[in-house]
Amino acid sequence: MYLIKTQLLFYFSLFSYPLVAAEILDYDMNGSEKKKTGIYKLTDKEKATLQKWIDTHYIRRVEPLPQEIGNKHAILQENLRNGQFIRLSDHTLWNISPEDTPISQGWITPAEIIVSQSGAPEYPYRLTHSLTGSSLKARKAENLTELNLKK
Image 1 (cartoon, rainbow, N blue to C red):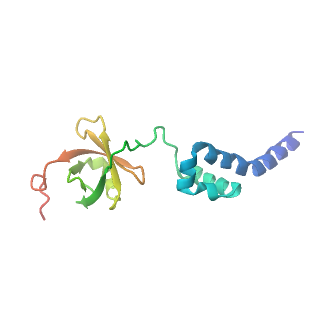
Image 2: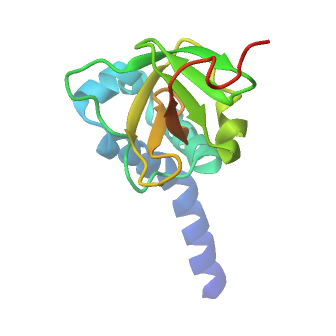
Image 3: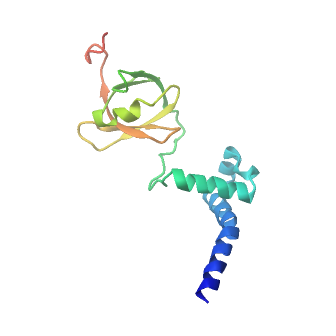
């Protein structure tokens, strides 16, 4: 009896996973998101494969990225000194927390950067890369001369 139940469960999971995964993607996205991402064009089997890949490679965020509220965010303009400093299109210069420079080193231009409060006293701002979702702590820097960035 146990063997029969196990086999039935195995076969059910094989055939039902595409439907469940397709439902997950369909449930998590609204109509405009489905159209924007192109997910509406996929078959249930393709959606299941995509969902399996997402489940394997990514961890779901507890809190979603902050949404844009009608204003444009600055664009990453320069990545200086191997990620120690970031300059944005709004002419702000940011000193990156040393523990976060491995993240900032990988940031390439152009990309929209969302600036928010971090709550950390030494690096009170959080810069979030809108494409990757990676974020780091930073503080405003006044100018290049003050930071001794001259070569």
